[in-house]
Each structure stands twice: as structure tokens, then as C-alpha cells.
Length: 73
Image (cartoon, rainbow, N blue to C red; front, side):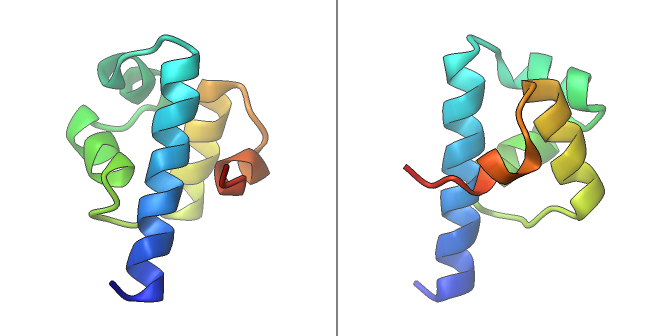
């Protein structure tokens, strides 16, 4: 697995963890972030990258700072 792909997976896993900690479904988060649930699923699974606007919208919907999405634990 190359470095870029592994970073996408780590970002997706963090978004998934943050969403689950808030007891939100993918559909709920997608609606709050104004993105499709299919796109959110692909982000969480590390299949696609996201642009900065999508990152900001997801962070706001999760009530976290954008940087927390890069906090790999």
C-alpha cells in the first residue's frame, strides 16, 4: 500500500471514529455536511480523497476543528 493511500485510510478511519463517538449514522453526518452518503462512505473507506471545503463541512458537522481529522490515534 502506498503512502498516499494509507493516509486516506487513516483520515477515513478518524472520521468514522468521530462519527461513531457522536452516535451519528453516515446518513445523518452526510446530511449535516451537505454531501451524499455514498461520498461519505467512500471517504471513510479511504477510496477517495476530499477537497478542503468537504473537510471543513465534515468537521463542522462533527463539531470538531479541522485538525482533529488528522489526529490519528
